[in-house]
Image 1 (tube, one colour):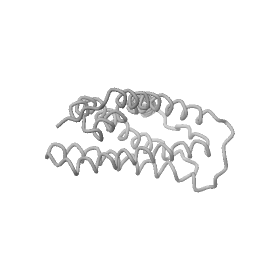
Image 2 (cartoon, rainbow, N blue to C red):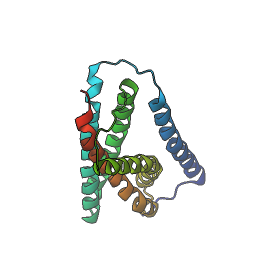
Image 3 (cartoon, one colour):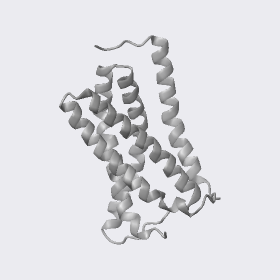
Length: 181
């Protein structure tokens, strides 16, 4: 049964989701633009590798979540998707830490792979900004038991999120040979 949220609570949640959906990408862009890098130690050079593992796990969890909901295993679906959401949040922190402490690695590939890499990178970045709003709404609707709204939102959130997490791994694999560490 669908839970109805009081209008004030719904408006407040929408406001928070909208603010976060703008603030997160803007904050990341500002932090990436900082030219003076912070020295937190050499351990930060491992973060891209950890991020690839996080993105791989997120992709697998998204696929598992779809499987579980199709099997009508709501408890497993909920656990899986909340884990994917948690990993996405950890990825964001790790990604920001890496770029605060290390220069961006230029892609060194030549020939046909170069436009492929940049297409994947640009589409990944653009959709990673877009997906924040959808994922936050999907999670909110799920935890407030607004299942019809959750389903409507997930029609967009799921494929975009799966694309972003999967292309994150592909982009990593393509640029990995060019990391200095």
